[in-house]
Image (cartoon, rainbow over all chains, first blue to last red; front, side, top):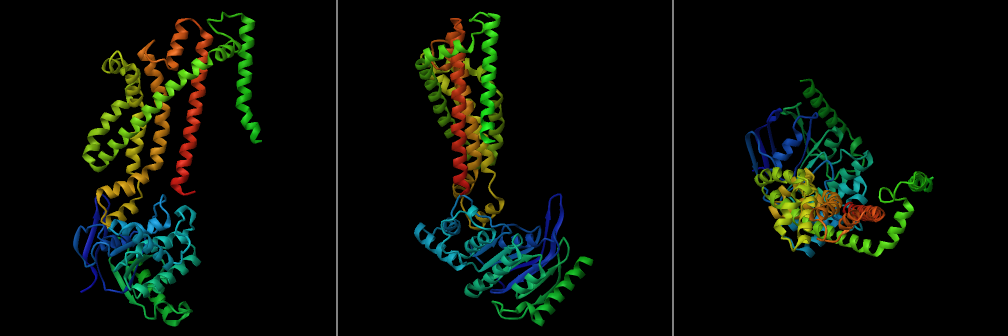
Length: 246
Length: 254
């Protein structure tokens, strides 16, 4: 049985017409799925459905992860400005009933995992965009989720930071093996990070096609220059172009 | 350049005072009608201890009113934050309170407080005017949390109280600071207006000093009391502004 699935879901917002679907997606334990599609195709809506933050107008959503086993990272770091990095990361633990000291030490461990040892006391305003995003990632990982949902997490960052963070996410995946579903506009990023790329049509989004990505994770150096990477990027780009052209 | 900019308002004040002094001497206008600034200055010097004590009385009333208004406004804002239906019910009533001039309700509140306790009436009236900006800031602030943080709290299965205490109240801090700044300024105005409403002999704050000097045609003392009121207002506002900025710096973390 899959970890989470959408079966023929449709989402319509009152007064705005259909936003998604009918759309189906099965997420298996431990896989990394990239959702790629034009703006407004409902990628983020699909992610919120998988998170259980929203209900579809019609269709079925099935989720096996329980409370606290799903984490979401948004496009912005979405940190509480009045809390330190440590307190931000400890928040989901504390809301799940983990007591102060244990929550803090787990938070420090999660910050260390994303390379932010020493920044525990810093406030979000004192961190760079990339560091704030890492704190956000640490907060998502601290509960050791089975399903990690990333909604264009690196869209606001520069290219070098993006690439570093992509490698960090893959390293973290290798440690904890959560299923990851992430949304992106960037075809190369999708192919680099995912084991499977799902291409969506313009809104209301349906599946336009899929591509499996082979290769070890974390990606070996020079992965972007391999023939199979280039071929997959080409194939996904064609699917996307075909989807947009209708 | 900076000190020129700082000196400019002082220079203008000095110029206006000089013009006032010269005009008074040249036209020989009677002192009970318009005393020259020099007469106001000597009245200020002669009455300074009395005026300072009166200012202190008005200030403590305003401060007590601010504290009470703050507690009530935030408690109600949190209650209606827990229950949207309650918010719909309370909002129009709060607006009625806002648009009703404090002078118009002063006589009623004075009756309720009892003839022997005008100071209670004055505090109550100052509370009424300080209430609205704090309440309105709290209500706006409680709705101002980052929607994605709200989603995360959904995801983490936070209870309603956890959401209020750990997300909405902290998110509301900038709005609360602003509301308290405005509310504090209004509390002073409310205290002064309420003293006027209470009339002479009630509470001997600054407004009473102004009324008393007016009744005795001591126009120089009247203007001296007004000057103290103005200085007190400016100092109070500056202090609150500093507090607000310090609070915001702490909240933002820089």
